[in-house]
Image (tube, rainbow, N blue to C red; front, side, top):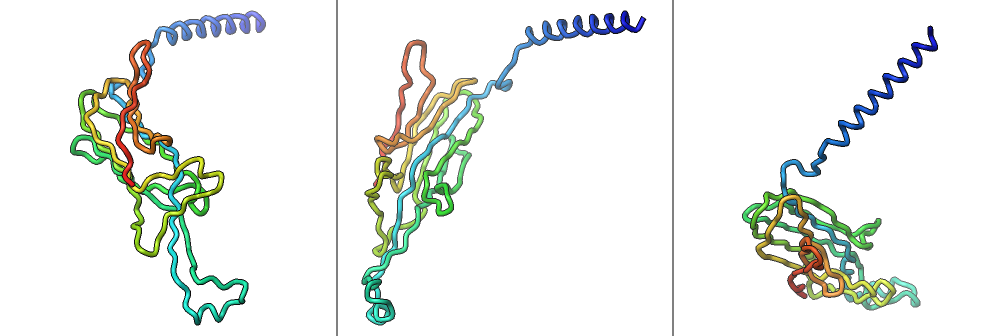
Length: 202
């Protein structure tokens, strides 16, 4: 009796599982049920290295051991950058970006996404160094292996009208080779993505 009941329960469970599988296989999954487009900003780049230098006085030099005396002393840090993104008349991102690591001297990374109503919009992206350069500051040219990846320019900007298609991604990224922001749109069948962008400002 117990064995028969166990078999019946197992059969019912199997039939229920098959029915559930049939229902789920016919269910349509919508990744974006609201039919929005998506604006994605993604970049990874090395910040500039800034050094503030000053001339050491004779009194200060006299207090130091002979082998450590330097008439010019410099204190350096990695630059930070403010990212400002506007879509039409609305600001959708306004934040400060810093490099990774304890001293923020490693590449900074960004990945943010914003849903956008389909249609034509004017997109404006600006990435500017926060720190001003005065007469006592210099931007170092890195002679180490990291120099193979040039640092971010002091200012980058991009502004243009862009068509946003429902359930499609418009990607804004950083072109390291040409040092500019670029927009990648989803290609048509058999086509390649066609990035557009604006030049960096020194």
